[in-house]
Length: 90
Image 1: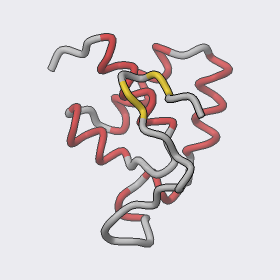
Image 2: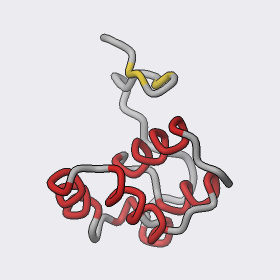
Image 3: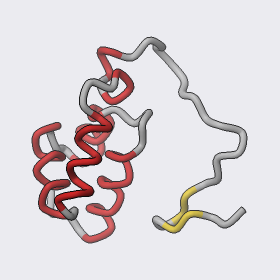
């Protein structure tokens, strides 16, 4: 799969989301966790990449097998829809 600029933006967005597991990125974009890490390292500033790695390392919600819930997903009542990678204003 050839990644467009929109695909890369969406992958980065999904990688930053706490409750989006790497398996969802693999299913949607056919990228392994290591591929996502390499993409994040390539596309982000070193300080941002380091902050992201600290954030996701060991986080149970980023790995499907470590999640405590089976179906459904948590969504905050104040969470807005994200359309074309621009967050709706409140």
